[in-house]
Amino acid sequence: MIDLDPAPIPPAWQRRLDQVQNTLREQLRWRLCDTYPGAQQPRYKHGGQWRINFASNDYLGLANHPILKRALAEGVERFGVGAGAAHLLGGHRSAHQALEQRIAQWTKRPAALLFSTGYMANLAIATAFTQKGDCLVQDKLNHASMIDGARLSQATLKRYPHADAEAARRQIDSHSEGLTLLMSDGVFSMDGDIAPLPELARHCRETQALLMVDDAHGLGVLGANGGGCIDHFRLSTRDVPILMGTLGKALGGFGAFVAGEEAIIEQLRQFGRSYLFTTATPPAVAHALISAIDLVQNEPQRRAQLHQVIEYFQTRAEAMGIPVTHSHTPIQPIVLGDESRTLQIAQALQKTGFDIGAIRPPTVPQGQCRLRITLRADHRQDDIEALLDALAGALDF
Figure 1: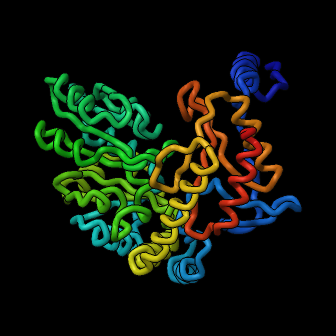
Figure 2 (figure 1 turned 180 degrees about the vertical axis):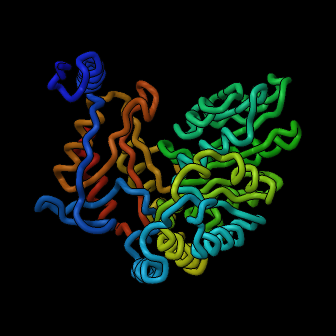
């Protein structure tokens, strides 16, 4: 008779889990997931307390927009709930096709391909376009998904100091074997600054490197057409052959896409493992996102209002001596350095009614802990004033 150990986890594994998790707690890096009631919105009641939301990426306030909710309900009636299969195995519904065509039209590119998340899109790009002997050049502050994609690929990863286009060129020039793919965020998610895309595009053209931009935090926010960093800098498909964008931030939905020439899209369709081997996103969500793109394009006042909020926050914070950076996007970091202080201030602000992200390693480098304030088009001036007054007190100004 076999004597089964009653412990559900083998002892050696339990010791491993205890060790790494206790270390994380001792480092004050243990993360908790709070549960929020109701829909995504600028203000809400949580546990009997009214809070103002300065932590979400719903920059245009579309996640709870009545037009999107009606479109989603209509999509459920037409397409049901789940796609039921991967895109290439019967899961690709007419709603997915219509959204891909709408994205291609919006981004002024021949074709687009949907992904379940931006993370999965970046894994597919890094692995589908490179092979052994190739080089992946990346900004040191790129999103983790691009770094992880490089690790999964067989290419050599070379990184350059943040936003340093000349250093990027040196990394391109230092690799003489194979081909080079340069991957960069458009707007950096923890700093809010914009990559020097015109310079990166020029270096890539001159060296025949392929440039990919992750515009998760620029799409819908920047550019006259809401087309993100590419629109902001008036770059073409020739300048940026691979554009990745997400649909769950400024657009208020869920998912991601890659847009580019037909050959770019087919490379991902044929070789992108995180596209091939996963169920397609719910078609009702795809249906609703067409309405989201329409809102972004047809209601530029939302973007204008957002940028007024950003300017007001920057002006008032500087006048009060609060150490903000010169970010021109909704992401407004206040770098404090010390982990314990950052966590304590974020917790104190939450107790007074403000939800703000406390960002610590490994999300940011050691010594770069920060409060990550994110602004929305539907924040009011009195929301900003209340936050800045609370910040000034918490920072002991």
